[in-house]
Length: 127
Image 1 (spheres, one colour):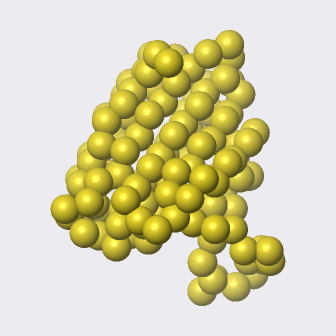
Image 2 (cartoon, helix red, strand yellow):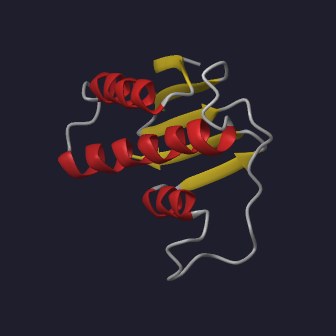
Image 3 (tube, helix red, strand yellow):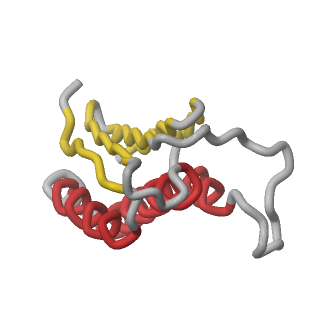
């Protein structure tokens, strides 16, 4: 698999923000549409912050990894943390701003496909 971007970051919010900037810069070579670029950056932000905060509980000794692949007009984003994994709830958060899962709802709304595999999230987005 040919990655446009691949790496990992310690579970620190400030480090993760810089890491998202690096990934976004790498993607700018492929994604020229501003709306798609914004959507992809938001997907990256939600997934990486979820990994840092919820997956690894901001333990700087644990890492969140990111891989981004582009093939045949489709972007594949893989994010993995060192946590116990995420398991989707049956009910969705509609209006409750205190509920968990809003980040994944945002990712699902902006993506063509989202797969949850324990502590790994795979997102597919057509460009």
